[in-house]
Length: 546
Image (cartoon, rainbow, N blue to C red; front, side, top):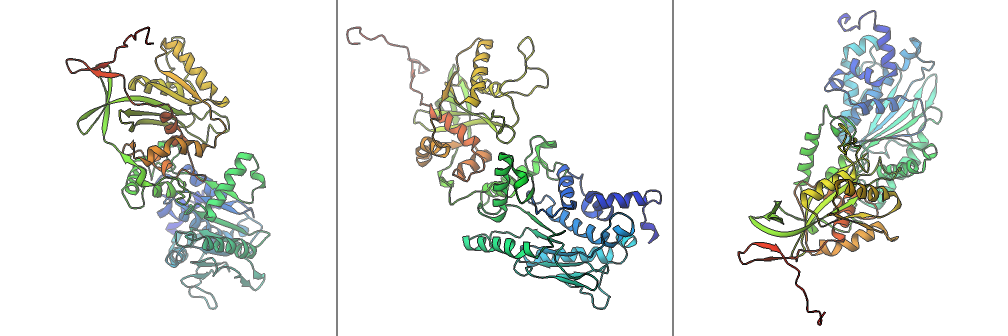
């Protein structure tokens, strides 16, 4: 096996690096999993969390297909490999045997997990060269089965398909006596089946808190919860809800969980996604389209990849309320139309804007600018929307008023861009203190452009609950089937379908509400004698009748 050695001059360095860095360990000893693509930045964050010497429970909540189980497998193999060797090589003072529990949602997953660990313990040549024969397959008194493994260095791993079968177990060692869990990995333990009812969710939570936590060594054991939300009241979602609440309040130090969470869409990351080298935007868009055309609907994508749960029990509207249109907008001879099924339909146009300008929400919320068209029958057609994070109210300009090269467009810049292209009748923005900069910058830009054609209307929220306000404006329109979206407006569709007290985001549906709030159908056009549509001319009334 000499051919499997690291270069002699780098051997000690690489073994030390692999001990301290799970990604290095994976690339050196598990290349089949770790060299498939460029390692994304978030894997380093998760890997660091997994190797922390901490007893604080760790929750890793990331999208499907983003390597959660691969990193857990690497963590388990890493710890078992280094269990005795770390002290022998002067990397650690601890050589106590490990007792790990690993729970998956199904027996098949559980057995595949053990199969993976067993395969590397038996057949990974470079691992065997440096860490010896860790398998217990030919050793008297050692368990080496399909769901339980006892390694030659006296570490143990039990893998189960349900939480109840894991609670209360312990291992025994001649020198250490009875051993409590060194770590329990709850890896995708929640699924649609075991979170379907309130009693099932309660039993699962009780098993974790009253069964699993007490069985972990309080001095150096740790619970690892690894998953994706499957229900708005699931254990995973409750961790997320509490985490976001503590984060907003600045009290994460008091939260019992350490949380590492990422969504698939990451505007500031390469390609705008979490793992650009493996799951780029084009792949996510294809997955999104697949969900959109499936019986489960687009909500499935947002649950699995954006960690946004559709809570049907609290949602106010469903898919039956949605309508779609296929066509385009045009201006001919100064008259605005949408063209649908070959027919020119006279419309008025409006913009609604929900800006995220508050310091606390600017990084977490989106700024949305949305354009709609209203026909003579008061049907509304969503024309376009821009949804951006991290944008100012107005772009930086030079002395000539031109946007600086490389500068980020601001909310007002997007408003004017849409206003000109759609020749809008008005723009509506919520008028609160934190949005006052939008109103001021819009007025400034009107003066700079020397145009006041596109009137800006500030709407006071008046203390109304946001969901109630949205519902009061939009419910009659959705109920009458008079709101039309374009195919591919998945984010807007998802917010409409999840509107309620437990919705994840409301930026788009809020902007939609503002756009409709002051809208009205076209009524100021008539056909002249040449059958050309022209604006009505004001007719003077008899002064006596007036």
